[in-house]
Amino acid sequence: DSGVTQTPKHLITATGQRVTLRCSPRSGDLSVYWYQQSLDQGLQFLIQYYNGEERAKGNILERFSAQQFPDLHSELNLSSLELGDSALYFCASSTQGTGNTIYFGEGSWLTVV
Amino acid sequence: AQSVTQPDIHITVSEGASLELRCNYSYGATPYLFWYVQSPGQGLQLLLKYFSGDTLVQGIKGFEAEFKRSQSSFNLRKPSVHWSDAAEYFCAVVFSGGYNKLIFGAGTRLAVHP
Image (tube, rainbow over all chains, first blue to last red; front, side, top):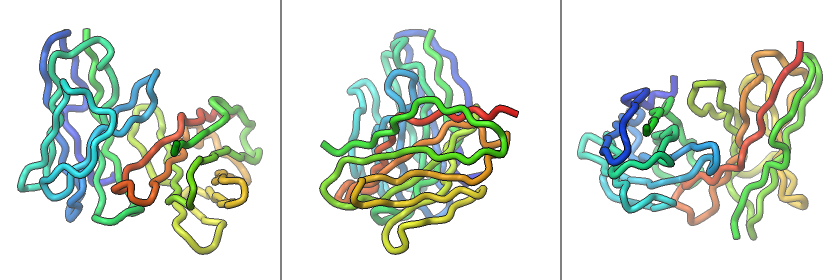
């Protein structure tokens, strides 16, 4: 158990819909990361937050957004969903510092039908 | 451009045989290097990491990896593979100034024959 909690574990929704994925980081970790894992793109970095502020952005679509709340939990919002958004979405957390170990949750499986 | 390459998409070994998974990176300096494992339906678990110092690092589950600066490589090894090692293995790097952003290789899927 990494200490990173993600909900829901599985989600099936229709095209055009909007979903929210939730993440609770490990106790004491101020940095939260979101990654997308798909068959064709592999593991892609989406976005990073540190103590409520956006720190780095990766290949995140404009239809996707995220935020980190004062209690440090984070949410990833995916809107206008397309079939190609079906993927495993990971949340991860770490303490501050380049090279610090990043701990991953078990992921949220999103299926868009 | 900064990148991570895992040349082998799929590897099959017999139980008890030795294993080496390859990883190369493209970067002007030494990055922070990691190996993660993903079992079916599971999240990513850190096996080991290298920042500096001794170029041979020991990890969990009997794995080790060796950093070779001249080859820009960080290969993962295990002397004797167990059936439970069947999983997907990801090499990942953090480049300095990269806000601790992990860049992953494409992964190597390991199958273990009894």
